[in-house]
Structure formats: C-alpha cells, structure tokens
Length: 200
Image 1 (cartoon, one colour):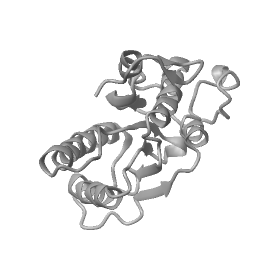
Image 2 (cartoon, one colour; image 1 turned 60 degrees about the vertical axis):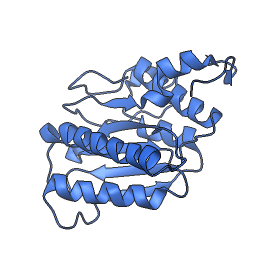
Image 3 (tube, one colour; image 1 turned 120 degrees about the horizontal axis):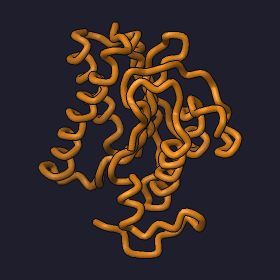
C-alpha cells in the first residue's frame, strides 16, 4: 500500500487507504496513539538515502517487535501504523503514526533511538527523533497526509501543502490494518463496523 517512487504528492487512493486504515485500527481496539517524526536532515541523511534507511529501520524494528511478542510473551499484538515521507523545502523527514501499547512505548522508542544511531553512524541523534502522543488519530492522519494531490484535498477534507518530492515510496500502512486485512475482517467502510470475525 504505497505510492509510486519519486512522486511529488500523495494520490487519492493511497490517501483514502491510509485514512481507512486509521479508522479500522481504532475500531479493532488498537487506535493510533503515537506520532513519531524522524528528521533525516538532522541525521545527515539525504533524500536519495532516506527511503532505504527508513526501510532498514522498519525491518529491524519488526524483528524486535516479534521478539517482544513471541519470545518474551508480551501481549502487544501485531505492529499497527502508517507512514508518510515528506521533503518540504529540503527538510527531509518521515511521519510515522503508530499504536504503541502503554507498557511497550518507552522500550520501542528506545529501540528506535538505538537503531537510528547505528544506521546514521552517530553516538547521539540529538533532536532528529520527535515523539508526540495522539489524541485525535483522524486529525493527525490528515496532517501527515497533507502532501496529497491538491485536486483531491477538498474531497478528503485535507488541507493540502507542498511537501516536496521524495525518491522512495511515499506512503504506506502495516499489513495488520491494510486493505487485505480489512477485507478479510469484513470491515464495512461506510458504517465503520466489522461484519465478520476479525482474523487472529
């Protein structure tokens, strides 16, 4: 569930998918509650490298999450989140909206910090990592998706902004709340209900 490489804006279908994923996450008891922003510029990482670095971070953290869930027996469920890359005026960064279980949050952020240090070759990443609590997932999602094609902004009730061009997949969701998962669960988009038992 991602945009094409090298796009200057987020397409309508991709934005819709992300917004649907946010609604579905809340319905299944895993609402987005953390807004993580990673500044690649602060890490000394340029646009042509940023996408690959973020993907490596995601893969490493997915392994860490599985270890916490299965080996350590923590009741945390699968990873839940969406991301959106941005590059307004050369300020290259990524927004990452996630559901972090309360007793995992501090450990996860520490894991992100540690891996960013390793990926960037730094001892301290300074202010490159910013984390905020999320009270209104839908509103925050529309904020991080503001790089949408202006032609569809009004339709999706998003205030469009020029978020620059990025040389990687711009936006994506985790499989747990993606289109296939929603279809398998029998999610009714219009009613925001699940018409069939969700998959384990």
